[in-house]
Image (tube, rainbow, N blue to C red; front, top):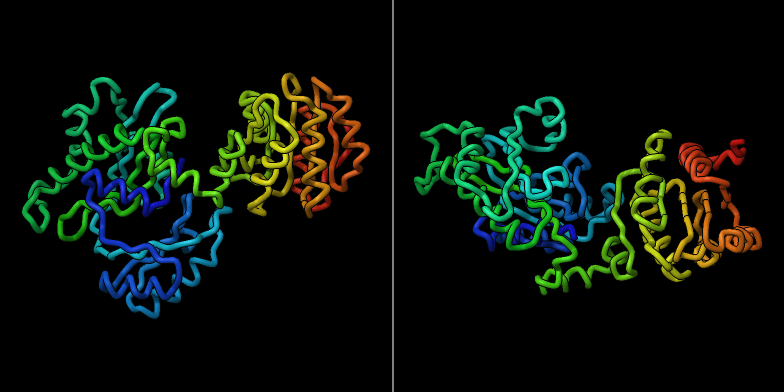
Length: 397
């Protein structure tokens, strides 16, 4: 479960990490009041579960209350990478001397936690990783031993801070940075997180070390140990991943424009890889699992299509426990009763595939094409997403 920035910073504060004073606002009036409490200037930040907020105009520095109200109104009307903005965080502004990057994530390659640090942070951290991979400190953390002192020292050394630099209270910046690394590890461990990221982690002109942003992802399977977070997850019906969880689906939002629906994680990942190889880009990972009924298929389609950013939908089912005719009925239920205006490509094989194709043929749904194979389905979906005219229905021999 991804947390919004303000919720992540609440966890940060509880773990002893340095964050700025801030207020959550749902309207321009509330944002103005928050700015009055905090003191100008302030930063108004879109609260959305996605990156790229700054580049999209979702983070603005405001020097007056009029600017705060105007920026809040603009940001609340935004959609950032398919995510609507329902609230903003109004936060104290600081003068930044340096931007760093710090994260602890669950690494499949390392089969455990990985500490990542860069002396360059900010909006282009991905580009820094590509251009200067050696500039990153990447250290596996033994989950039994925990974070070791030498690993903290490695991060502090890589930051190359001035030994004389200290905060207003006289605490050396190097010491503050070491404390942040240790606190972030404790938060990662105690909250059952799969990612705790600070980008940027800044050094202010006054020598303070401050977490200017937060990105926290909690392991869904551990939510039963965190009652408050679980309640937030259950209450977040407007969030696509939360809605998918309630329907019993495995769903991950991606940045492409081809919706993907399949049964079985391996099949779905294979389809996503084939889409990429064909020049397309998947908008999601959505796995129905085994034995999905028509109502589950309908729920999956609702989640996938709810953002309005999907240009084509690819449904690939290999029936085992799952019956293809049940999937077909779910497709007919959603596509026949709502105004879905994107091309849909369906591949059905396995259990009750003949019956499923018959259900689709009888429904005569406009914009729906039945493919003979997975390869053909991928070709048609990629072509449909690239062309507003819809898919080329010529089949490969």
